[in-house]
Amino acid sequence: MAAYEITPLTPMPEFDIMYFMEIAGETRVDHDAMEEFEPFWDKWAANNLKACKLTNPDGEGSFLLIFLDQEAEDTIEGIWQDSPTHGLLFHALAITMVMSAAQGFVPELSDGNCAPLPRPGEGVLGAFAELGLTWNQEGTVNRKYAVLTPYPYVGGCEVCYLSDNCPKSTARSN
Image (cartoon, rainbow, N blue to C red; front, side, top):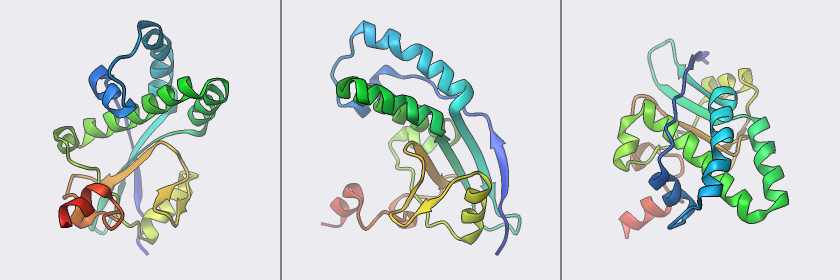
């Protein structure tokens, strides 16, 4: 098993109101909500958003891993408990942040391409353990807001662990 090198990266998510509204499924967001988002976006981007490149030193495969840490998840859960409607907006804000950061590293994602989820091998799982993360058998990491994708971009459905269950992928085969 080749151990993967973990190289920290500096994510720089950009808030795009239209992208946020698409993720949130909203046609408008009131000014008060936007004002409330700003300090959370700034804090999460500076302190809670993590990004790294996982590289196999033997030359085969590298991946981008971006996630919001437990503190951000706990904040969103607290907001959700106080107001499910508000919580849903903050949930969408977190997704927007992670995906915006991913688009900064993998420009193809900005063009509407998916971030295919690879099936992590033992080396990637070892890197997860070093980062305090766990891979779940459902094809997820133990962070609610996370992206793991080949880096640089290498394609969509054909390399994706979830392609058999993905509505975008299965819709194409019908």
